[in-house]
Image (tube, rainbow, N blue to C red; front, side, top):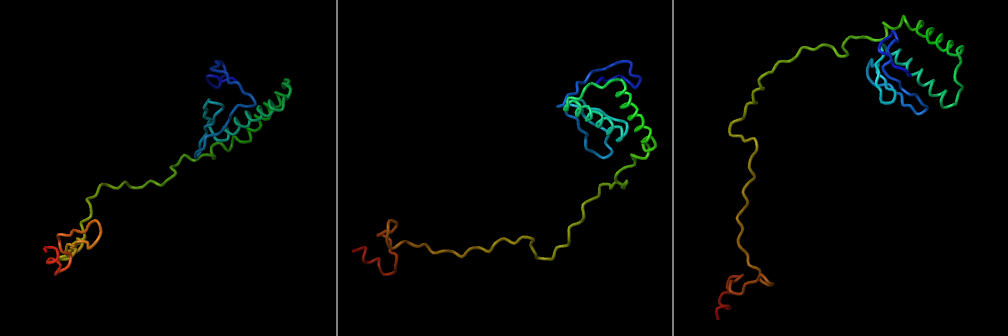
Length: 164
């Protein structure tokens, strides 16, 4: 495929080789007319033109996959005639296809506002009360085991037995 500088097709810019493995896809978007052929990105004038380009490249790929013979001049004339006919049939639809209005309604922008005042507080009320204090714990000494201390009585009245 030859890419030209403009629609007069006088100055070629580059050649793109189209094979059966050539990737061609359309870009997804609202009213998007972009498409890719391999790593080359293109933009058509309308979505219908984009569909036409992708259909033409897809038809070439099918012919290459099926090893179709090279078309003669008569076949090429038929292809070109079919494309012109398609363009004539869709010419009236070009202006009605895309709407250039905004997709979302225009909204008045909000200006910066001061923060809302805090809600009134009830007297003598805390927002988060601290937890109640824990009751004091009496020290305990174990009666038996490795933590038992023989010099400290664990029960009243035992002190005399240890001092003797």
